Amino acid sequence: GKTQLQIDKNRLNEAIGNFKKAITLDRYNFRNNYLIGFEMLKSWDYLSNEDRAFTLERLKFALKIEPWYGDSIYPAMLYYTKDFKSVLEVTPKYYLGYKILYAFLEEKNLWRYRKQIKKMLDLYKQKEKAEEFSREKEGKIKLLNKIREQKEEFVWSGTSEYGNNKYENGNMYWTGTIHSLISLSRGLSLIKIQAKGEPTDNIWPYMIVELDGEEIGDRFVDSPDWTEYFFKVDTSGGKKVLSVTFFNDGGDEEKHEDRNLYIGEVKIEAGVQ
Image (cartoon, rainbow, N blue to C red; front, side, top):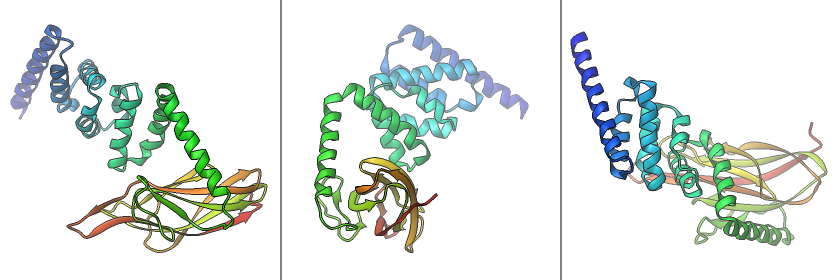
């Protein structure tokens, strides 16, 4: 009961004292910072604000030196702290740091945080990898211009992320993007995209929709039957490229489950309010 609780608390305080001494003696030791930060994280609920700040500092230092350790630190932090702000606090403030965090969010389907990190990722990508970013942008523009030259509208085409698999008839079995040429009237329009999905581990496929390379919305496609998803846009009209990116491909061989996204017809309703 109470006595045991006091003993445990005394042990915790003693351990924290020893941890702090170890850091004082060797502040810039990566291994010490990582192991001590991780151990203290496990007692998060019992730490004072000061000790929590100390814990975050250790993990922040470790990640700054070895951002790949985010693979173990980020899930543990969300589990023990239940606070995404703490995760952001320790994330290294450079491109690779945000890229690793984004990959973790993508893998774990933590899409509610995705947009926030995507903005930071893009910001640091521009800042630290301006040339590469410029080349990617040019490539995207070239691709969009090529699609605009097509005569046929409302026909989906595209390849998987690494370009090794072609999508047929809007059937997206792999992570990647498909495009379709559409025509819009000037002003407000409602783009209706038919889609259906197959889940794995109760997680449905997730799509991000772009028009001429700009994001216009995102959805979990959480129905095995054809369902219409609506996206309202305000444009200058004319031919546009509609793109759908499928992000979270996955499967479970034991359960014979495969997460897939199927994209069907596109309808346009002009003059909506």
